[in-house]
Image 1 (cartoon, rainbow, N blue to C red):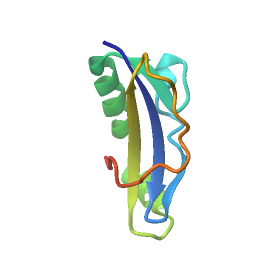
Image 2 (image 1 turned 180 degrees about the vertical axis):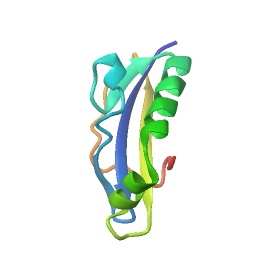
Image 3 (image 1 turned 45 degrees about the vertical axis):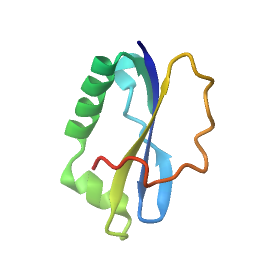
Length: 92
């Protein structure tokens, strides 16, 4: 089964941008579609590319930084990313 993933980043003020480097090996920007194994590999690649300095910078003085993933079955209609709850999935 394939899933569609969109990745965003945020801080204590909420989601503020797309995670642009996520999905790049698949020719995408801040999104991808693939098997659970492909998604896991891409999440690991993305997180391994983050430095402590990246995380601190993206906190923007709030003391918190997170990566949010929205994962849906590939056959489901795509949903708009705005208004998402930043407490759904925190990875960094």
